[in-house]
Amino acid sequence: MTDPTLPSATPAFLNHDRPPVPDLVVPRGVQPFHLHQKPVRGRLVRLGPLADALLGRHPALHPAVLTLMGEAMALTAALATALKFRGSFSLQAKGDGPVPMLLADCTESGALRGYARADEAKLSKMLRAEPAPPAGALLGTGYLAFTCDQGPDMDRYQGIVALEGVTLADMTGAYFRSSEQLQSQVHLACARTEAGWRASALVLERVAGEGGVDPQADAAAQEDAWQTALVLAGTITAEEMLDDALPSERLLHRLFHAEGLALDRARALSYGCRCSRARLAQVLEGFPPDDLDHMAEDGAITMTCEFCNLDFRFDRDEVQSRAGRA
Image 1 (cartoon, rainbow, N blue to C red):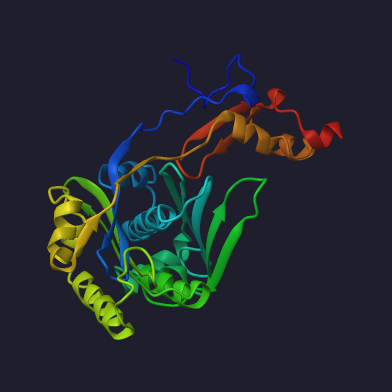
Image 2: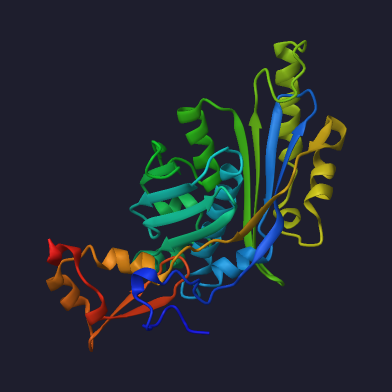
């Protein structure tokens, strides 16, 4: 079997083979649920070994950065699987802190990936003063964007808010309050365990007048039901969220069994980097010939996929610039 990261007899623009990355699926990675006749729905995400496969592709990143990246991927999976769409849903944070770029995206089929870029000088300085800095300190001042991209034939939906809050969960709550006018609660956890990296998210949303809510219930009763759900969700611990031996169904039962818990159909998550020689060749073709010549070393151009951290090597002669043909 040939390695698609290396030049081959197949033209680059035709080579869509999957690179040598884990072919991993977590069948019940997302467990949606609702509370019967109460204004509450939610999703519990458990990435399991998928977190280790995704985060393990970036061994050079500090654990504090990987923790933030794992939380972002779990959160993105939770938000993406609440939507009915075809395409990808992404979270992107840009700031002036030690982690100036954070990105995670998930397709409608549950293909998940993530990336973070660190400013090593800023990060080292921060870690000397604070060994486990929170998301707000790592990202700094900037913005948080949630984007639903359904392809070139559909309008892209994007919501953007300023980075506000100490944790990524705080920032997401601020986004929902300001942009979506939606009451929500988010719990995130990510850590390196004895089994490897694990990441999880619990997202609660308040629904109004639908989704199994009793139409006869008055506003006070619905508010009481929502507040009760928030209190119960607040008892969840990071250890529970990251425990492979504790199934999602049992964890949700612990939290909400007295509130009419109803489980919906679970959703799968998978290792979702979509890089290929064909995709990267298309990017290279957008550069003018002089830039391509400058990129080449010993007659070859090397491009690195930021998501799976794999290097793709192109012979300079096989890359034909569209700009040069214009």
